[in-house]
Image 1 (cartoon, one colour):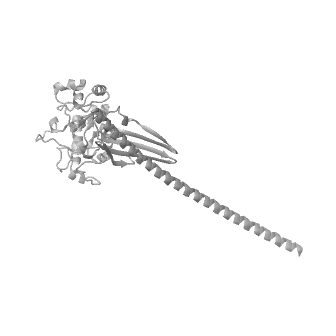
Image 2 (image 1 turned 180 degrees about the horizontal axis):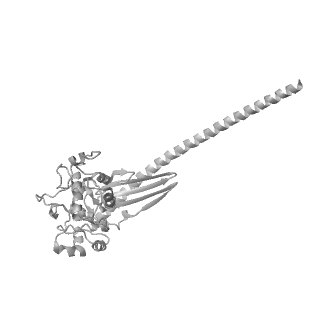
Image 3 (image 1 turned 90 degrees about the horizontal axis):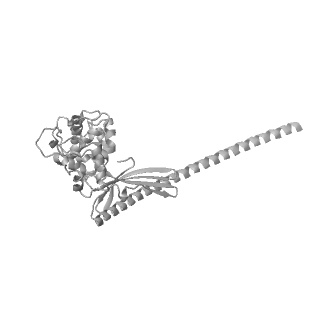
Length: 344
């Protein structure tokens, strides 16, 4: 009888031990779950906090860029030389240390590139000969020259360059009349799969060019580093900040050929810290050599800029964000007119 009681007690003790272990396991699992959930909540809160911080830092970078450009304009007014060149203070990359990361900002001249929107303008002429330089504006002739030098191994022919240009003009201009035999208006795009509608006006992003009939992915990749899309066609390409490639697109009005690399490099040497007026450029060694053969149009060329691009990157904690902002400087007042997380 005593043995039976002892066995029952051992059995009850075992059940109690198992029950205790189960309770301890449940409490431990619940505690771990609560801890993990709490940690996730803290991480999300931290991420949101740092995300908001990053955004504020990027907006702060815009304000600083506006200040720098406004001050640059005031200095130009004091010096009585309204120019923008690569030697000026705004063209310096700036890095600022933060408590939990860093902020990097770089202002660049948007008018150092070729503004695609300027191609919409057409010559007021009845000349239907699209092989003649007189049938094109100065900007259109420069774009034709640019197309011929993009691929050094297999340069595009003049005829092909004119064929590429025509659909771009039609995409940008307001009418629905094809620009010559190679043009393409709304009817041509309705046959596409899927059908698209030409903008028939200024584009906001150069990526829209991918939809144009004559632009292949390969050609777009070659063009992309040299072009931009500014509101209203901007004021033209800045001679003081343009690259060697874009300087090669300048020539006399009756010549579709681009300048040589050596000529473009000489122009860069001649401009030094910047041309103060367009006539300074015309007095340079290369234009002086070209002048007896014809005139160089000042249409679409400038020595100062109104549009600038701010590229900013910020790192705060685990947050990393980048933003590109288009700034328009109208006298002493600079404003942000466009911003994107994916470039402009």
